[in-house]
Amino acid sequence: MTDNKRDDRDQDDTEQDSSQSTATDNNDTPPRQRPGKKPLVILAIIVIILLIVALIFWLLNRGIESTDDAFTDGNAATIAPKTSGYVVSLNVRDNQFVHRNDLLVVIDPRDATAQRDQAVAQLGSAKAQLQQAEAQYALAKVQYPAQLHQALADQAKAQANLANAESVYRRQHGVDPRATTQSNIDNATSQWRAAQADYQQAQAQVEIASQVPLQLHQQETNIAARQQQVAQAQAQLATANLALSYTEVRAPYEGYVTKRNVQVGSLVQAGTALFSLVSPQIWVTANFKESQLEHMHPGNKVSVTVDAWPDLKLEGHVDSIQMGSGSHFSAFPAENATGNFVKIVQRVPVKIIIDKGLDPQHPLPLGLSVEPKVHIDE
Image 1 (tube, rainbow, N blue to C red):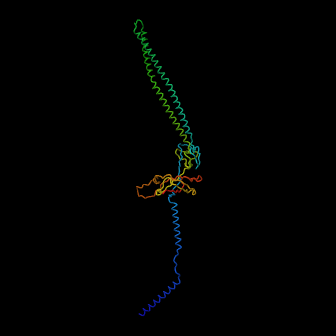
Image 2 (tube, helix red, strand yellow; image 1 turned 90 degrees about the vertical axis):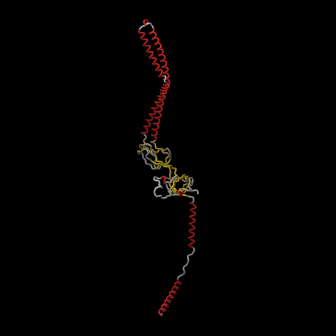
Image 3 (spheres, rainbow, N blue to C red; image 1 turned 45 degrees about the vertical axis):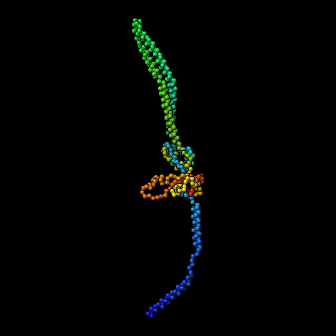
């Protein structure tokens, strides 16, 4: 028991020493200070500034739909000849501006010229034959009635001769045979028969000559046939002149010559692309997301910036919205009714007409990247 009391006193002494040592350490360490209000004020100011900036950005961009999937677009026609041959003259340079009906390329015209000359000769021959037919018709209108009158006169003469011959025939056969001779009787008989033949022949001539309307109609038909030959020759001449005109390639409208693929001496075939002609009328094709079209309609004002000319500011308006998404008119349109369907936001081409801001010193080639901003109506 004595040992236990001694151990308790030692433990109490140890705890007292430890308490005194701790108190001494606390007195040496300065007290910990609590953070002030200045950092909180700075943080609050930063948050307020961010909110103000966000509000200003939202106010400035409210009612505006923009996209970077847009480019300049325009009319670009591929110029190709309609005839084959060697190029004998080239009147344009790369990127040259030309006006409508300007002569661009000349193809060797000798073959076409020979065909044209042949057609001219055929037309002249057809016209000569037509004039001959018209002259024959004019002559027939006088000749056929005259032939009818002559045939009638011949018929009357033959009829008179027949009557005279018949009288002689009867007289020779009615008298006493002793008062005439057999020779006279035979002559009278032969003359009567000859007169009958002449009269029948005269009647046939009258029947032929009396067909005056039919004969004139025949001549009229001949004139109509010659007129058709003239018309055919004129058509052949027109075709030859058209083929000759194809040897001259002219500009269908004013624009810039691009992608020239022809030189003097080149053998070109009909339909071969020589170059492209780009019209100076430029517009913007912007592919907006389908979710951006809710309030967009033709007439909305548009501001356009061009990547190539950052200082160039263009203004225009929405001309039209394509009735179909871009993927629908692609070579392989999506078939949503087959396979697994994954919804993808579609883009719809929108045509934007540029109203002002174009600068001749800053041309806009086709395909330049632009960024339009459409001011929609809420």
